[in-house]
Length: 178
Image 1 (cartoon, helix red, strand yellow):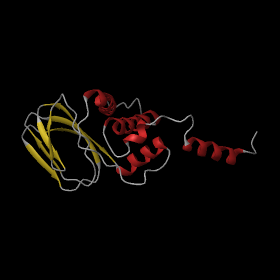
Image 2 (cartoon, one colour):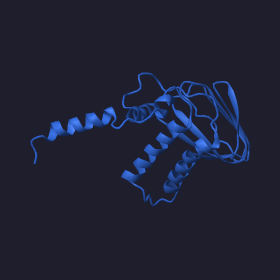
Image 3 (tube, rainbow, N blue to C red):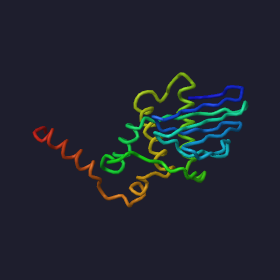
């Protein structure tokens, strides 16, 4: 979502049911995620907002921002497809801010999505838009510290378990076709 309110504003979400990422376009503000306060500015990308925490947002009158919300079940499915198995526990994000180099791609992907939705033409409608949403989730998982980060950083095997399952399923369904 896009937000600009032209007046100082304060929000409180007592128990988040989503993952979120804020991007400040201009102005200043701050957020407090699970008791950890962060400054919000154009130069920085705050840490990911995990589920089941208290989120407090304080925006100055000049604060303009984008907010990305990700469904926890969708993010868990994406993570499972990346590591080859469904994650057995919830994804838990750390409150450690990431260097700008880690988040640059995420910011650019979100900006492309916003531009596509803003222009009204939707040149990426259908498959490309879905792929862009998937790319945003992949970048989100890669640019923040979380309890499955080590699985994403390990050496990629020549073939992943999900690829084997896909091939087996295809062969089973099509063994009698020319």
